[in-house]
Image 1 (cartoon, protein in one colour):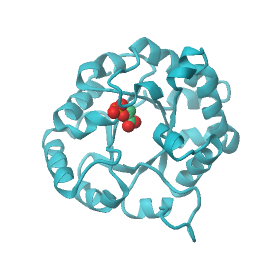
Image 2 (cartoon, protein in one colour):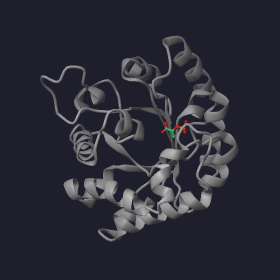
Image 3 (cartoon, protein in one colour):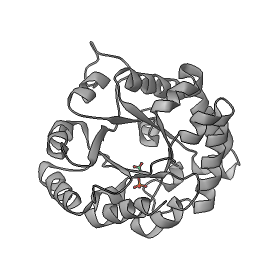
Length: 253
Ligand code: PEP
């Protein structure tokens, strides 16, 4: 059985005071015995402090991005080994905001995926289509291409240590989530693509849904058989919302 997961992508939000207030509430309310993984992804500058604070709790920490290179003369970049060093367990690669605003293409995302694995971090690979692509009936083609770039570079075995997040671009930060049926259809497609190469790995790979997940829709999304939890942006900054989303994931099985 795949363990449900809720990931909170703080994006470029937060401050020492706001992070402290949010984490205090979550630490108080989240139940450590819930059979789920909860991971928060603060901006780089707060990682070390948040990791220190969360040590010994049931909440893990990840980064929102990683350099594709292992280290060296790459001003402004952060290596996977550094993320590991300060306590990260996971890293998001290929978020649509990185693809869109920083022109990260499939090949670079695949290299970042590999850098994460080499640094002993679990990559959370984001894939998903734009509204234009969905309306042109190209959703499967797009997610197959994005997933395929990683499969081609690292092989299906790499997914034993990875998480996939299906995030339709049109649903991110828009308040308009994919319907549970739309999400399930793509998650099923992704799992079948993995199964073409290895059925056991496909069955074990966690596929999260991301795109305007909130307390009010988490239950119905997580009730879908191939939706193993959520990658949550805006609602992860609101303690009540994030708590309810985690509770919905805990109730999944
Ligand atoms: C995200 O940041 O990956 C995301 C899904 O954002 P939101 O939940 O705000 O749509």
